Image (tube, rainbow, N blue to C red; front, side, top):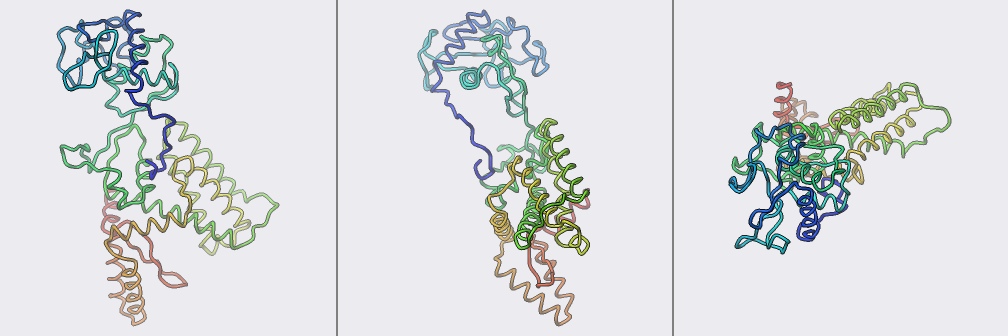
Length: 400
């Protein structure tokens, strides 16, 4: 999580440290006539909570009793769920007013969130598979314990698919974050994930991860070039920026704020930086761009605004230079070659071009491009950068 630049939680509570809070909440639910005791078990009574089903849209007749256990015939309604379960051999247990036992599947979430956040708070999240029964039951027991309990926003994320199949251990297509970041920069994975709205299913493929990695490299390289250009040359102060630059800045601000305010639409927010990055590359590298009035001031301001966007999205590295180097190292690892090998190939290609052996020169370029190493010819010679492997790039173009 730290490698992905996810902020750490303020609190990471353990259920075993909150048994007293759980027992007290169950007592409150019993006092409010929304639960009953059967032989050391305590069940929530859905019949006594008319709002049951409002989150999932299910009616009581549609609900199944539970996902993990067989129906208990002692229940008054098959949809009733356990708040406290009597102790069984081999299971942990705690003393309670109903005898030794342990909390049910749902009650700990309500008790701990109420303890740390209060009975009403803004955001509650989880996978879409938790809408029913887990979150539905959380709402019921929380409101049964405290009528003022409420959540302002429910955030449910879509499933991860692998090559259009649901990711699961049974299918053998399960991929861990640790495994992915052995071959890809962690922020490339983060950019890939942010490229799909969180409520939608996301299709994990190596091809799309390569595209995200390539896009991240392009972003950081542009910002690094801008940083170096502004450091080497003196910026003038005084007059305002050109109208075109101000328009790009305002458009970026508006698109970013609108998309993030629209249920955290990160894919649109990411797309908003594409045009400013192109403008920056024009100012940095084209003959026309280099002649533009207030060029350096425009570059510095655009870089600053994009930096804000990247920071909010958790995509801002501590150093563009270090991130670019890490991206290059990961690309070499994926290609199973060393940088020395790439430089040797560049020398061979340069010699072939000097000898007018253009077919051999093209073969070397294509050989490296096939494994995700792109050669860049410039006034100071040939350099290399990571890229989408050529065969994959062609496949993506065909699909689109």
